[in-house]
Image (cartoon, rainbow, N blue to C red):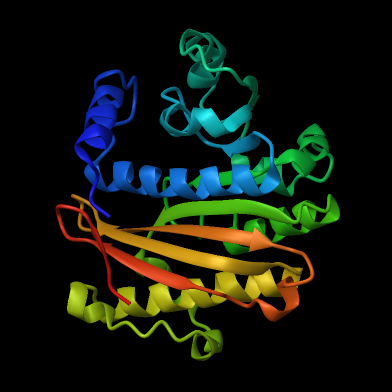
Length: 272
């Protein structure tokens, strides 16, 4: 999965022009991986796609995937960044419309009265790039994802790409305890790749809870890709990419394909 010289040049240019966040080799490789998924989804749908996510002021994801996107909905909690987004986006000369929302993304998804609900029938790429863990002070984000899926299903969105990323926080390990992990055979010994027993348990449980949430909501998964890398602060960051389907094959498609990748300081390697 290593980046080509051309891809490295592209991401180096994006880094030089980055306004706020510092990207990394691992994040760049994940973006390129997702680009392939997004291009495939565009071909299957036969149209440009609607991106819903947290691009901040840099719009790095949108800048990488702009060829497949014609509509961007950006959610930003920091008002100072929100106020600059329209001007920055216009300077990028990307041929796509932009809607900006100043709010917590979990509030936006869970608020039944929000006008954003009316736009969610068009969400083809959902990227929830959480700064922290899946368990925040206000939300169990597995439940947030469940509400998101229910809304997508209500609008009969049969195919879309769901991606979310988060830290693993040992303090929340007991929260993710579940017997569901016995139903998902990851066939991977994470301790061989530098994971502690608690991290191993959390990874397995979060995958199991995610799959169970999707299935119970009515979606099948044509693929589930999990990228893992350890940050400079020692915490593992996990990135989940799910190809969601709700058609005649969904009921028989629990998870067609589960791929796990670990970053080894140079690039991601498939470990299962």
